Image 1 (cartoon, rainbow, N blue to C red):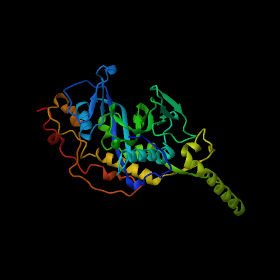
Image 2: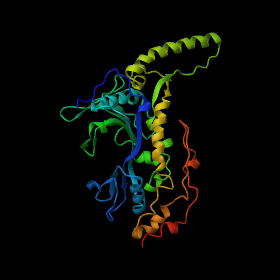
Image 3: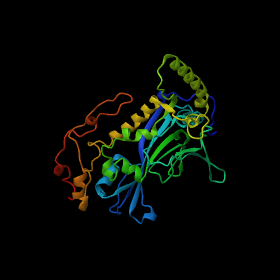
Image 4: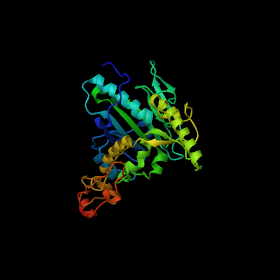
Length: 360
């Protein structure tokens, strides 16, 4: 494997890419070890929390439903949602790695512009470059495009919301085959972010609007918009039009060589009142991936009635479990969120029947 190589080849077409979303991990506090959990995801009890907090990595919907039942009092301490991008078909390892670098450079590094709610993010932006001695070097990325091995960061580790971008080549400290590498965008929600989105307990993930709530953090842009002028006289309007065209010509080389960083604080094209055009095609595909994740937490799927021998937690679980009588199928147009009724329950079944197996 030769490694990553950036060249002048264009990035793969969006139609040739796969976008997938998942919950990378969830940390649940105010819990105590009980019976051994049977989960597909890997559960870790950090020693520093003395058995009062668990973290589950790569959880399935059933895993989180099980935690919601067995630990209804548990509070979410951290939640990380990721979107992976990878090419559909690569003839060999080198082509796959080269495609990932172009994807990360031409789509993500040049266009990602997360939108944060005030108070949830410090505004920090930087790229971490690994050094030969094992450390990292922090570099700004408003004067150049970050390399393949550099991790883009928006926000500090303790911010309420942090966004990270990197090429994922390992999983749980285990190196992945080159053909399984992918570009990863991660959004980590800390206490302020969880509070803002109303996520306190695991059961709150049921019917959570992953697409509409998290999409602002994955937002991509691709061009600038001139600020609006108040003058309307014909000769002045004509002059402003020529000025805007001149500015657009000056901006284009910076978009091609650096991306959005050139127009933000510290960039060569930084200026007041600038607005950005959203990259609808990229945003739509990311939104579709988040919507598929969202569908897994609809009323009909995120239930814990299948659990047996819940014991003393059965009454607590009863108040948290909901289900629907029938599945609802629907479709959405590109750029639209699913209507509320698309993910709402069509009716509740008797919870006594649903949970009759609990405690038996």
